[in-house]
Length: 75
Image (tube, rainbow, N blue to C red; front, side, top):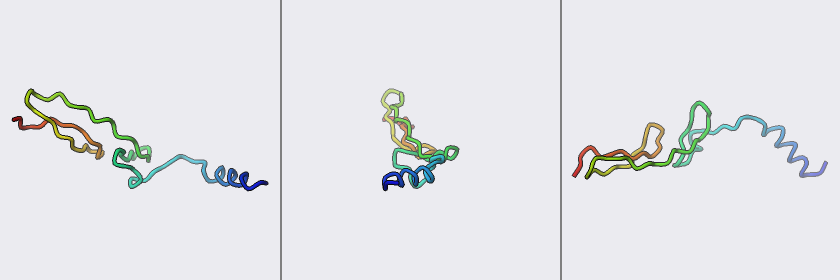
């Protein structure tokens, strides 16, 4: 068997399985999905429709993904 064929055999033997991640593997734009055991991309931040004269602040939701929320106090 040629050397590159051994590499294919090794990956076939050990690389067959469900992909999984760990929470520390996720980037800033990802969250860890416990059910899938994978890092998932956070949804895009959408600009909220706030009352006239009110702005918004970008914070994080329960998954630590960025989310835009209207300010409570308008100026």
